Image (cartoon, rainbow, N blue to C red; front, side, top):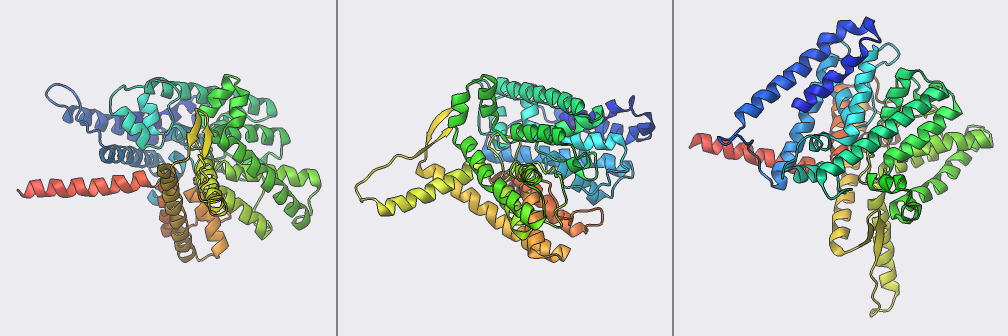
Length: 477
């Protein structure tokens, strides 16, 4: 609560540069101060006699804590939009969910939005890329921190100490932000746009200050900078650490890195050919558009350089596939994640090989992470298959619900919900200020489940219901 209040107050720093936005001061100050005040009260009420806060270390309670942290952040992040008269309550919740989960789907008209709200959206995505728990572990050292860190979906420790891991990631993240902002500025963007786009590209968020996203600039240098930042954002932080240390050979050997570039080598040329034949583009233009948009979908960033309304159906299918696959585990990206898809392909191949090879043959399959070789055992295979089945089941259910609530075609619904569930942000035109409330709610559930990787949300909801029942039983007694 304290952290959320501080983060929501940060957009006030733009007021000296845009004094016309001072009328929105209370829109941010009120929810920020209220969150801080409630947090202080919660700290005082929640203390034991020995002065320590009550904590429980099970995965169920960690999931409840993470779920509450994100729910509170979404609620407080939405309030400025409502107080400032920018959006309705449901639209404000949608914008906050899209921001914190680094999705990028939007119901705001950015062409007329005040600068303070444009910054607020971008800053939510920048912080959402790290996650609330990640930011808290930089400030708080506690035995519960590791449980919360894992519950939020961070699988890797870059340093022996968790706090050092969070600080290392924070330094890398902000270092890339400074470099990205400077590069955008040199390429011709204004300072404000440079900061906002760098924050959203690194967090694989995709909010833009322009109506037509990156395509508004029609600048090849800006597109190249965005491509580099999207690649950084979708890459595992552990791999980025190897890059910073110039351990190139180790980076090249990582399975998910190889798999990502293999996907790009296959699908970028296919999409470019579809552009050249279906949209009458030249060779250079076709590859330029294909590389940017395919990578934007695979990295789950959501920036676009052109409209999708006239795209060939197969090209739309490629984007849907890329959005479902997503980026690297331990990065800011969403989707099923590259390592899981890679493992599913390896497991399937292994299963076929097992049927063809002699019965006495023994194999020990493995894949390579940034930390080294990892065996593909039965437990890993079961966890991976379980997540992929849950993800695809949610995708099917959400797609069908979108077709009903938005009255659109199956292809359009698949595209839009793949974007929501994968926290991508690309839209085929269904998500606008005129979108129905029910459709927005369906997409919000998709974004939250996608960002927190499904199981944490389900465990958190289940644990909350059980805890509520137990409390009611105690009250009755």
